[in-house]
Amino acid sequence: MPNFKSLAITILLLSIVSQTLHSQQSAVVRPLEPIAAKLEPSSVVTYKTVGDKELELRIFNPANHKNSDTRPAFVAFHGGGWTGGFPRRFYPFVDHFARLGLVGISVEYRLMNEEGGITVFDCVKDARSAIRYTRAHASEMGIDPNKLIVSGGSAGAHLAASTALFDDVNASSDDLSISPSPNIMVLYYPVIDTSIGGYGNEKIGDRWKELSPVDNVSENLPPTLVLHGTGDTVTPFAGARRFSQEMLRAGNHCQLISYEGGRHGYLIFDLNLFDQALDQTEVFLSDLGILD
Image 1 (cartoon, rainbow, N blue to C red):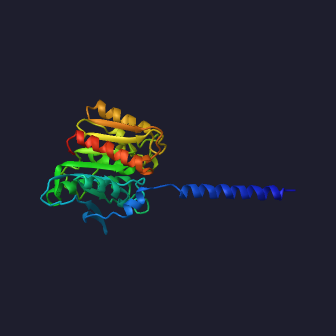
Image 2 (cartoon, helix red, strand yellow):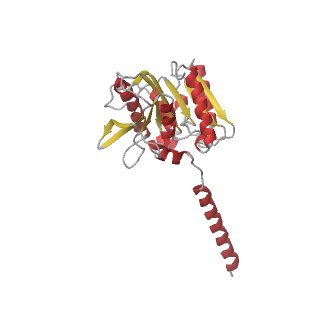
Protein backbone atom coordinates (compact mmCIF):
# COMPACT_ATOMS: atom_id res chain seq x y z
CA MET A 1 0.00 0.00 0.00
CA PRO A 2 1.38 3.44 -0.85
CA ASN A 3 2.01 5.80 2.04
CA PHE A 4 -0.31 8.64 1.04
CA LYS A 5 0.68 10.75 4.05
CA SER A 6 4.37 10.65 3.08
CA LEU A 7 3.47 11.36 -0.54
CA ALA A 8 1.40 14.39 0.48
CA ILE A 9 4.26 15.73 2.61
CA THR A 10 6.70 15.26 -0.27
CA ILE A 11 4.44 17.12 -2.68
CA LEU A 12 4.00 19.93 -0.14
CA LEU A 13 7.76 20.23 0.35
CA LEU A 14 8.37 20.31 -3.42
CA SER A 15 5.75 23.03 -3.75
CA ILE A 16 7.42 25.11 -1.04
CA VAL A 17 10.85 24.70 -2.66
CA SER A 18 9.41 25.70 -6.06
CA GLN A 19 7.74 28.78 -4.61
CA THR A 20 10.94 29.75 -2.79
CA LEU A 21 13.06 29.47 -5.94
CA HIS A 22 10.50 31.50 -7.89
CA SER A 23 10.52 34.19 -5.20
CA GLN A 24 14.33 34.30 -5.22
CA GLN A 25 14.39 34.68 -8.99
CA SER A 26 11.73 37.40 -8.85
CA ALA A 27 13.64 39.19 -6.12
CA VAL A 28 16.81 39.69 -8.20
CA VAL A 29 17.69 43.33 -7.71
CA ARG A 30 18.21 45.28 -10.92
CA PRO A 31 18.84 48.81 -9.66
CA LEU A 32 19.57 50.23 -13.11
CA GLU A 33 16.06 49.49 -14.40
CA PRO A 34 14.24 52.28 -12.52
CA ILE A 35 17.04 54.66 -13.51
CA ALA A 36 16.77 53.65 -17.16
CA ALA A 37 12.98 54.01 -17.06
CA LYS A 38 13.31 57.72 -16.31
CA LEU A 39 15.81 58.45 -19.08
CA GLU A 40 14.89 59.51 -22.61
CA PRO A 41 17.19 60.18 -25.58
CA SER A 42 17.73 63.62 -27.07
CA SER A 43 16.88 62.21 -30.48
CA VAL A 44 16.28 58.96 -32.34
CA VAL A 45 17.49 58.21 -35.86
CA THR A 46 17.09 55.20 -38.11
CA TYR A 47 20.46 53.86 -39.20
CA LYS A 48 19.21 50.89 -41.21
CA THR A 49 16.01 49.36 -42.50
CA VAL A 50 15.70 45.60 -42.99
CA GLY A 51 12.40 44.61 -44.59
CA ASP A 52 9.83 46.60 -42.65
CA LYS A 53 12.05 46.84 -39.55
CA GLU A 54 13.66 50.20 -38.81
CA LEU A 55 16.73 49.93 -36.56
CA GLU A 56 17.41 52.97 -34.42
CA LEU A 57 20.18 54.84 -32.66
CA ARG A 58 18.96 56.31 -29.36
CA ILE A 59 21.12 59.41 -28.99
CA PHE A 60 21.94 61.23 -25.73
CA ASN A 61 23.55 64.62 -26.36
CA PRO A 62 25.57 66.49 -23.74
CA ALA A 63 24.47 69.89 -22.48
CA ASN A 64 24.80 72.72 -24.99
CA HIS A 65 25.54 70.28 -27.77
CA LYS A 66 25.67 71.62 -31.33
CA ASN A 67 25.72 69.75 -34.61
CA SER A 68 28.94 71.59 -35.44
CA ASP A 69 30.70 70.04 -32.43
CA THR A 70 33.34 67.33 -32.78
CA ARG A 71 32.84 65.29 -29.64
CA PRO A 72 33.82 61.70 -28.86
CA ALA A 73 30.92 59.24 -28.95
CA PHE A 74 30.20 56.36 -26.57
CA VAL A 75 28.21 53.84 -28.61
CA ALA A 76 26.76 50.86 -26.73
CA PHE A 77 25.03 47.56 -27.44
CA HIS A 78 22.76 45.92 -24.87
CA GLY A 79 23.09 42.31 -23.79
CA GLY A 80 20.58 39.48 -23.74
CA GLY A 81 22.28 36.52 -25.40
CA TRP A 82 21.52 38.02 -28.86
CA THR A 83 17.91 36.83 -28.33
CA GLY A 84 16.57 39.39 -25.86
CA GLY A 85 17.09 42.78 -24.27
CA PHE A 86 16.48 46.27 -25.58
CA PRO A 87 18.39 49.57 -25.99
CA ARG A 88 16.96 51.13 -22.81
CA ARG A 89 19.05 48.76 -20.73
CA PHE A 90 22.14 50.73 -21.64
CA TYR A 91 20.61 54.18 -21.21
CA PRO A 92 22.31 54.64 -17.79
CA PHE A 93 25.71 53.98 -19.38
CA VAL A 94 25.33 56.28 -22.39
CA ASP A 95 23.60 58.98 -20.33
CA HIS A 96 26.53 58.96 -17.90
CA PHE A 97 29.03 59.65 -20.65
CA ALA A 98 26.78 62.27 -22.21
CA ARG A 99 26.92 64.09 -18.87
CA LEU A 100 30.72 64.02 -19.21
CA GLY A 101 30.54 65.75 -22.59
CA LEU A 102 30.45 62.81 -24.99
CA VAL A 103 27.61 61.89 -27.31
CA GLY A 104 26.02 58.72 -25.92
CA ILE A 105 24.30 56.26 -28.26
CA SER A 106 22.39 53.07 -27.42
CA VAL A 107 21.93 50.88 -30.47
CA GLU A 108 18.93 48.80 -31.48
CA TYR A 109 19.73 45.66 -33.47
CA ARG A 110 17.82 42.65 -34.73
CA LEU A 111 17.50 39.81 -32.23
CA MET A 112 18.31 36.24 -33.14
CA ASN A 113 15.16 34.40 -34.18
CA GLU A 114 15.40 30.97 -35.77
CA GLU A 115 11.84 31.04 -37.08
CA GLY A 116 12.43 34.44 -38.64
CA GLY A 117 15.77 33.37 -40.08
CA ILE A 118 17.74 35.92 -38.05
CA THR A 119 21.11 34.60 -36.87
CA VAL A 120 23.95 35.92 -34.74
CA PHE A 121 25.65 36.83 -38.02
CA ASP A 122 22.78 39.25 -38.65
CA CYS A 123 23.25 40.78 -35.19
CA VAL A 124 26.92 41.32 -36.07
CA LYS A 125 26.00 42.86 -39.43
CA ASP A 126 23.70 45.33 -37.67
CA ALA A 127 26.41 46.30 -35.19
CA ARG A 128 28.88 47.01 -37.96
CA SER A 129 26.21 48.93 -39.90
CA ALA A 130 25.51 51.09 -36.84
CA ILE A 131 29.13 52.16 -36.49
CA ARG A 132 29.45 52.79 -40.21
CA TYR A 133 26.36 55.00 -40.07
CA THR A 134 27.67 56.90 -37.05
CA ARG A 135 31.02 57.52 -38.71
CA ALA A 136 29.44 58.53 -42.04
CA HIS A 137 27.04 60.98 -40.34
CA ALA A 138 29.42 62.21 -37.66
CA SER A 139 29.46 65.78 -38.99
CA GLU A 140 25.66 65.93 -38.74
CA MET A 141 25.65 64.53 -35.21
CA GLY A 142 28.39 66.71 -33.72
CA ILE A 143 30.74 63.73 -33.40
CA ASP A 144 34.43 63.27 -34.13
CA PRO A 145 34.54 60.21 -36.45
CA ASN A 146 38.01 59.40 -35.15
CA LYS A 147 36.90 59.21 -31.51
CA LEU A 148 34.31 56.44 -31.50
CA ILE A 149 34.21 54.37 -28.30
CA VAL A 150 32.21 51.18 -28.77
CA SER A 151 30.93 49.32 -25.74
CA GLY A 152 28.38 46.80 -24.56
CA GLY A 153 27.53 44.16 -22.00
CA SER A 154 27.60 40.38 -22.45
CA ALA A 155 26.37 39.58 -25.99
CA GLY A 156 26.31 43.34 -26.58
CA ALA A 157 30.01 43.45 -25.77
CA HIS A 158 30.48 40.66 -28.31
CA LEU A 159 28.79 42.88 -30.90
CA ALA A 160 30.99 45.79 -29.83
CA ALA A 161 34.08 43.64 -30.40
CA SER A 162 32.66 42.44 -33.71
CA THR A 163 32.91 45.95 -35.13
CA ALA A 164 36.69 45.65 -35.01
CA LEU A 165 37.22 41.93 -35.52
CA PHE A 166 34.97 40.35 -38.12
CA ASP A 167 35.92 42.04 -41.37
CA ASP A 168 34.17 39.47 -43.56
CA VAL A 169 30.74 39.85 -41.95
CA ASN A 170 28.96 42.79 -43.57
CA ALA A 171 25.47 43.73 -44.67
CA SER A 172 25.10 43.85 -48.46
CA SER A 173 23.65 47.36 -48.06
CA ASP A 174 26.74 48.72 -46.26
CA ASP A 175 29.26 51.03 -47.82
CA LEU A 176 32.40 48.97 -47.28
CA SER A 177 34.62 51.99 -47.88
CA ILE A 178 33.56 53.25 -44.42
CA SER A 179 35.33 51.48 -41.57
CA PRO A 180 33.15 50.05 -38.79
CA SER A 181 36.17 49.64 -36.53
CA PRO A 182 36.01 51.88 -33.45
CA ASN A 183 38.89 53.83 -31.99
CA ILE A 184 38.43 52.35 -28.51
CA MET A 185 36.56 49.34 -27.11
CA VAL A 186 35.10 49.00 -23.61
CA LEU A 187 33.76 45.49 -23.01
CA TYR A 188 31.70 44.72 -19.92
CA TYR A 189 31.48 40.99 -18.98
CA PRO A 190 31.72 40.11 -22.69
CA VAL A 191 30.83 37.03 -24.66
CA ILE A 192 34.40 36.68 -25.84
CA ASP A 193 34.80 32.94 -26.50
CA THR A 194 32.11 31.16 -28.50
CA SER A 195 33.66 27.69 -28.27
CA ILE A 196 31.98 24.89 -26.32
CA GLY A 197 33.85 26.13 -23.25
CA GLY A 198 32.53 29.65 -23.65
CA TYR A 199 29.09 30.95 -24.58
CA GLY A 200 26.96 30.87 -27.71
CA ASN A 201 28.36 27.80 -29.42
CA GLU A 202 24.98 26.16 -30.02
CA LYS A 203 23.34 29.44 -31.01
CA ILE A 204 25.94 30.17 -33.68
CA GLY A 205 26.43 26.62 -34.89
CA ASP A 206 29.24 25.10 -36.95
CA ARG A 207 30.61 28.51 -37.95
CA TRP A 208 31.14 29.56 -34.32
CA LYS A 209 34.85 30.21 -34.74
CA GLU A 210 34.16 32.97 -37.29
CA LEU A 211 32.40 34.89 -34.51
CA SER A 212 34.69 34.08 -31.59
CA PRO A 213 36.60 37.24 -30.58
CA VAL A 214 39.34 35.34 -28.75
CA ASP A 215 39.98 33.30 -31.90
CA ASN A 216 40.17 36.31 -34.22
CA VAL A 217 42.62 38.64 -32.50
CA SER A 218 45.05 40.35 -34.85
CA GLU A 219 47.47 43.25 -34.86
CA ASN A 220 46.41 46.91 -34.88
CA LEU A 221 43.17 46.51 -32.96
CA PRO A 222 41.76 49.44 -30.93
CA PRO A 223 42.84 49.98 -27.31
CA THR A 224 40.53 47.81 -25.24
CA LEU A 225 39.28 47.70 -21.66
CA VAL A 226 37.65 44.49 -20.39
CA LEU A 227 35.76 44.27 -17.08
CA HIS A 228 34.86 40.73 -16.04
CA GLY A 229 33.93 38.85 -12.87
CA THR A 230 36.08 35.86 -11.95
CA GLY A 231 32.99 33.95 -10.80
CA ASP A 232 31.16 34.32 -14.11
CA THR A 233 29.67 30.97 -15.11
CA VAL A 234 27.81 32.29 -18.17
CA THR A 235 30.74 33.78 -20.04
CA PRO A 236 33.65 32.21 -18.15
CA PHE A 237 36.46 34.48 -16.97
CA ALA A 238 39.01 32.23 -18.64
CA GLY A 239 37.89 33.56 -22.01
CA ALA A 240 38.40 37.18 -20.98
CA ARG A 241 41.86 36.36 -19.62
CA ARG A 242 42.84 34.55 -22.81
CA PHE A 243 41.50 37.40 -24.94
CA SER A 244 43.60 39.89 -23.00
CA GLN A 245 46.68 37.70 -23.40
CA GLU A 246 46.10 37.32 -27.14
CA MET A 247 45.63 41.08 -27.51
CA LEU A 248 48.88 41.83 -25.72
CA ARG A 249 50.70 39.11 -27.66
CA ALA A 250 49.58 40.79 -30.89
CA GLY A 251 50.95 44.12 -29.71
CA ASN A 252 47.60 45.70 -28.90
CA HIS A 253 46.77 47.88 -25.89
CA CYS A 254 44.45 45.87 -23.64
CA GLN A 255 43.61 46.19 -19.95
CA LEU A 256 41.70 43.47 -18.11
CA ILE A 257 40.11 44.46 -14.79
CA SER A 258 38.75 41.51 -12.85
CA TYR A 259 36.23 41.57 -10.03
CA GLU A 260 36.94 38.71 -7.64
CA GLY A 261 34.02 36.31 -7.41
CA GLY A 262 31.83 38.51 -9.59
CA ARG A 263 28.95 36.75 -11.33
CA HIS A 264 27.85 37.45 -14.88
CA GLY A 265 26.82 41.08 -15.18
CA TYR A 266 28.04 41.78 -11.64
CA LEU A 267 28.13 45.54 -12.09
CA ILE A 268 24.47 45.89 -13.09
CA PHE A 269 23.20 44.36 -9.85
CA ASP A 270 24.89 46.78 -7.46
CA LEU A 271 24.98 50.56 -7.88
CA ASN A 272 28.29 50.80 -6.04
CA LEU A 273 29.85 48.32 -8.47
CA PHE A 274 28.22 50.14 -11.38
CA ASP A 275 29.76 53.43 -10.23
CA GLN A 276 33.10 51.68 -9.75
CA ALA A 277 32.98 50.29 -13.28
CA LEU A 278 32.21 53.73 -14.71
CA ASP A 279 35.08 55.22 -12.71
CA GLN A 280 37.42 52.54 -14.09
CA THR A 281 36.17 53.31 -17.60
CA GLU A 282 36.74 57.01 -17.10
CA VAL A 283 40.33 56.40 -15.99
CA PHE A 284 40.95 54.28 -19.07
CA LEU A 285 39.47 56.93 -21.39
CA SER A 286 41.36 59.71 -19.63
CA ASP A 287 44.65 57.87 -20.12
CA LEU A 288 43.85 57.77 -23.85
CA GLY A 289 43.12 61.50 -23.94
CA ILE A 290 39.35 61.18 -24.41
CA LEU A 291 38.39 62.76 -21.10
CA ASP A 292 40.06 65.73 -19.44
